[in-house]
Image (cartoon, rainbow, N blue to C red; front, side, top):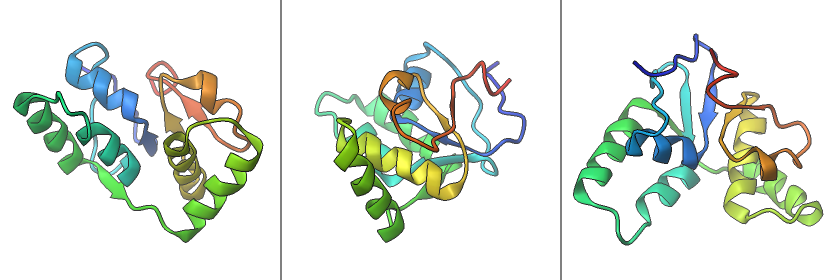
Length: 128
């Protein structure tokens, strides 16, 4: 059985879903509490060596999650962060999405994200 998030709304980083699909760190996805940025959708499906089985598993997960599009407020917040921090654009947009939603980001990449002010983060241990 996977890790439960106990009804706390969370935004999933791309690596959380990759680890889940690979069976490395399994979590439970709840349609009421689990959110994903459209940036994460892009990152998950862009890989040229993705297998049909992996793509099917990813799409099944995405059907459960609430997909959040990048809007102007998210893009502007990410741009402000990008001026001050040397972090990839995709990560900036994902972080800005979590901040705009007012929910924590579940990630295994805390090294880069910890530089971003006002971002609440955790991993599966934080959501038990």
